[in-house]
Image 1 (cartoon, helix red, strand yellow):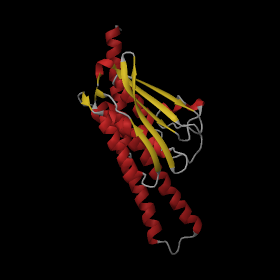
Image 2: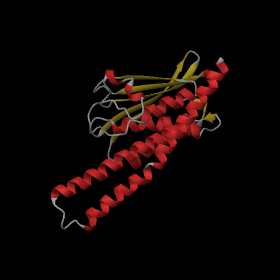
Image 3: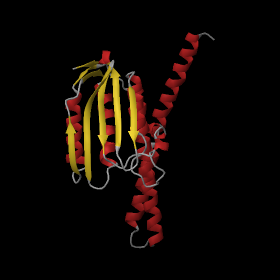
Image 4: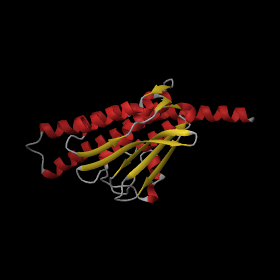
Length: 240
């Protein structure tokens, strides 16, 4: 088989896997909703006669279905990196970052005390929707994995040789070094703690988007010392 045929076969397999990922994450959500709905209905209609243990089991069912649904939705977002691609355009990254931070502060995490610094970021030639998803995932991680109710967050411009981009730095709980590679895999997280929030999709989505943009991503983190993520795109895809 020639190199061209090998490449064509690899692209075909990749496409089939993406289609399978979409089907699993999209179609499996329907029966999950039914399980969740019926469990809640049983509890609601029989609350006076169910014992404490049965109520606990029903709560465990709804909790598990919510978690699994979140995982499927995350996988669906991951599949859309390939299925919902847009044309590249010049994007005001500074404006995107400001909008996402404001939404997190007012809608998602209104009770978190924040100290946020956003320096003037470069415009990038990119898929706006996908880079917005990258920023949203990184900023959401900073809010979610903060220490207590206080967050210090910096979003800074980065220029290095023939590349430019941005850096997202926080003072959160950090990630153990042994998990630095794991967190970029779907459904993997930066801790072995079972009750760690999130579904382990954010950084894997970030990596896939940056891979599509032929850029690079670098993670630096230590436990209790926060996390720094640097995103760089080729200079041919950036403007000032």
